[in-house]
Image (cartoon, rainbow, N blue to C red; front, side, top):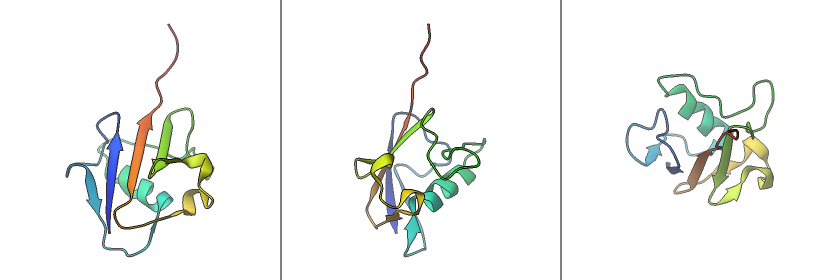
Length: 95
């Protein structure tokens, strides 16, 4: 299964360009984010610790341009071969 990744920053753990290949035929967005985070040289947490939701203070994540609040299965939403996962780091406010 090939999953494409788009982002507004260099994604830690994405060394091979803009896509990742997985041997699994079934993969959820939660599993994908865990694999991506584990491949990063420094700790990355896409999911708010102790919960089953994307950390909205730090990340905006979309599957084929559908934002995470609209995923019917939450982190158990299945990915399909050729899907595009967009990971956007949320800019910090302040002055």
